[in-house]
Length: 239
Length: 211
Image 1 (spheres, each protein chain N blue to C red):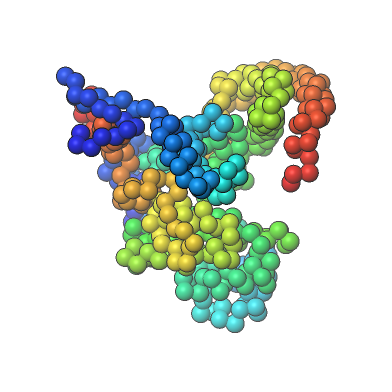
Image 2 (image 1 turned 60 degrees about the horizontal axis):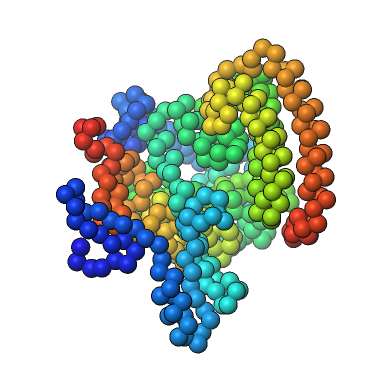
């Protein structure tokens, strides 16, 4: 190495160059700012940061504690799914699209499959039972996805208990998914032309039982959230 | 108009796991659809013709396929047509921009698609604009639909279409110093080494155990 890099110093070993990646030098930043009269600082937040769910980079311009400008780097979760699908056939692509939003795989799959069926001109040939199963799975998926949103949303606002309850409910739905498709998440269950397999025997009754349990449990969680003054104040009337 | 195509989606050369790489088929490209278009499409076309006197010059083709209406617009007229669709025909929303690369269509290789939604009338149509690879410029629609900002950046990033008049056309998904535009058909799948702080990890396809 010809230049010194404060964030990644290197040393030569028998296996080649070894880099030690370190964090930012907060002390030098603080001393630098201490000398200037301006309060404006630029902070590079992320891409790995405990308060972002996933990888997101924000370049923040701060005036004291007020964010005056923000620029975002959203590409860290870009996985090149479209490019991959160019090299695969229509059925294989379901395995990719199911991972696009890992909280609502059935919706991704169904949207993709409906488009493929439209292109092939076979929309009217899809068995009614398959369409009904798709809708049923999407509705269950909607519940599990909303549970994560409510649970983690509450966690973000400082309430931990609603997250436990929301994830308990979500897990029940995922158990049903596992019984139907074999997998909890990323099931690639919906396929162009229908679904990968029929509902297992007795699933009908089990789902009815599940819905009954969920209805009962939702009440607990609703009371817990609506009864929470902080959660209400931070969510009511904000758009 | 028909043309022979081979392989999947025009991509060839690398990593085809589908077994369809040797597929040869004829692609059909549509001419203009004859009236009546059916559904609410005649109404949309009539309204646009009435509101926009230059209709026949700006709209090169009207295609109805699989129950969807696509208006092919000359790129110089795109902003005019879009403003009229928004203001007079109540297409309040542009749902984004999709890029497409047709390497075989000489002179019109790069295509931008704009799906429009009218919430008041519950109607959906699509605008299609084509441009050449050698002159990949299309006017920006950020002035008309502000939400197009990031979508146009994405199409620029993935396909290299330059949207003239965009307030800050930079890459959005790939790193700023990336070479090439990944979703063009001549861009390879994989084969790119990972470089981080001077250390290089070869692409999976070039690692020793796979060769």
